[in-house]
Image (cartoon, rainbow, N blue to C red; front, side, top):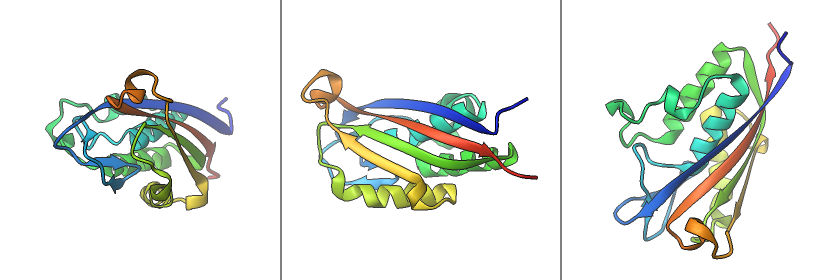
Length: 163
């Protein structure tokens, strides 16, 4: 018998490159580099999708939205998040809460976090109070510390819906 609540963990990372917009949590963040990837490469939303998929036993973002499918080329990750929400609904699961940590050396993200919370919660049709986002640096260590890329991790708690 399935549990009434389920937890999933997600992680994503992408390299930083010139000539791309930086999209984090569905928000366009002014910066001299952006994240490279097949879609908009939003590491925060990708980590959320993987956390939701893990909790719902749906595989992962690459299984649901393969990088070799042209329909996902440069697509907003919020579109993919909305599709994930529909899969959760079909599976009889509701989101209790999501917690995200974005790891980036720069830019400073604190002023963008309220918009990220609203963006993610809107795509998932949940209250913004159900989405927590934090940002941290890696204190100069590793690929994040050298500003070669960014990463995010997320945890999602789901519950079975009644009926």
